Image 1 (spheres, rainbow, N blue to C red):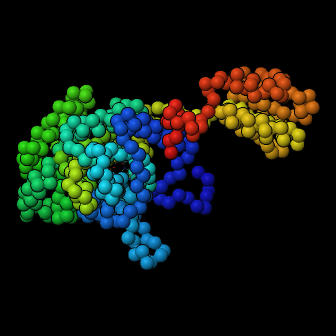
Image 2: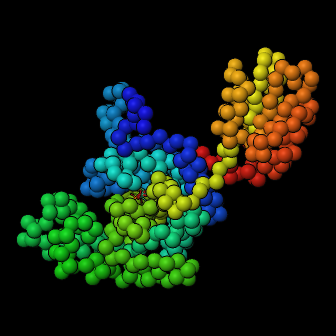
Length: 449
Ligand code: HAM
C-alpha cells in the first residue's frame, strides 16, 4: 500500500475497477431476475428523516441505537441531526409507498433497489460502514406463496452467481406481533431473578429488546435459554399454518432450507416469516442476505395496514463468496486496439482514427504523448491490447499504417484507409461494443448503474 497522506474513512473502501466488475455482474443478475418477476426499480434518497429509521427499524435495535450515521446540516435552521444516512432500504421504500399513495396501484407493488447503505458498526471482516445492498420489497398482498416466490428469486440470483452451494437458507416464523408480545412477557417473567447470571450486554437486551436474547452468542445466555419458554409454545395457529404452507411451497419449488427456531433478525419490523442465507462454514455472523415479512411497518409509518415482505443481500459479501469460489466476473473492459504514433501529422490523423474506431464499438486507447515508439509498444502490451496500429512519419507519407497482432507477435503494413475495416474484420462484428441509448430492448442489460 502506498504511503498516502489521505485514506478512505475507517470501514469504507474505494470500489476499484477490479471490484467494479463483480459489482456490475451482481447488479446484472439482480436486474435480470427482478425484471423477470415484475419488480421495478426505486431509488429512495440516501438520507431520510432519522425518525423513519427509528420508528421503522425500532428504537432498541443495534442499528438505531448504535449504528445510525446522523447527518447534521450546516444550515442550523433545518434542525441539527434531523437526518440519518440510510442503514437499509426497507423503511425508506415503505415511506415512499405511503407518500406516493401506492396503495392505489395494482397490488402487490414490487420494487427493488440497489445502492450504498451506512451503518456505524465496528468494522471487521465482511462488516463495513459503507456497504452495498440489493433489495426487494413486495407490498400490498399477503400469501405464503409470495414468501416462497421471493425466496426462490433470491435463490436463483445466488445460483446465477454460482455461490448458492456455499450457503444455507435458514428460515423461521416469529409469529404475529400479538403472539410475540405474549411470548416476550413469558420470557421476561422467566428471567426474573436470573438477570444477574446474564452477561451485561444481554441484561440490557432483556430490558430493551428481549427477542435479541434468542440469537445471543453468549454461552451463559444460551444455557439459561434451554429451559426458557420458547416462541413455538406461544405461536398462534394461524402463524403455524402459514409457516407450514411456506415450507410446503419451498419444497414444491425444490428449495432446500433449514428450519431455525433461533432466527429472529435484528430489525423490529418483522412479523411471521424471517429468513437468512448463511455462510455454510462460518455461520450466522456473516449472512449474505436476509429478509422477512413486515405486516405492521406501513401502518407504523402512517399508512393503512398493509402487508409486505422483502429481502436484502450484501453485495460485498456476495462478491467475497464469488472470489473465494474462484468465480470470475465476466466483463467488457478489454482493450481491443492500441494506437501508437510518431510526429505531428501522424498524431492528427490518429485523433480521427481513434474517434472512428471508438464510435464503431472498438475499445481503443491511444498514446498521444511524445513517447518513443518503443515505449508506446510497451504500453500496448501493458494494456493487453489485441492489436496495435502504428503510424509513423514514413507511413503518413506513404498512406499506410502498420497493424500488429500482439498475441501472434506479427505485423504487416496495410493501406491507411483500410485500417478500420481490417480491424473490424479481425475482431468480428459481433464482438463490437455497440450500445446506443435508442437500442433499448436488445441491450437493456448494459445499463447497469
Ligand atoms: P439486514 O440483515 O440488516 O437486513 O441486511 C441485509 C444484508 O446486508 C446482510 O445480510 C449483509 O449481507 C448486508 N450487510 C448488513 N450490514 C452490513 C455491513 N455493516 N457490512 C457489510 N454488509 C452488511 C436488512 O437490511 C433488511 N432491510 C432486509 C429486508 C428487506 N427485510 C425486508 N425487506
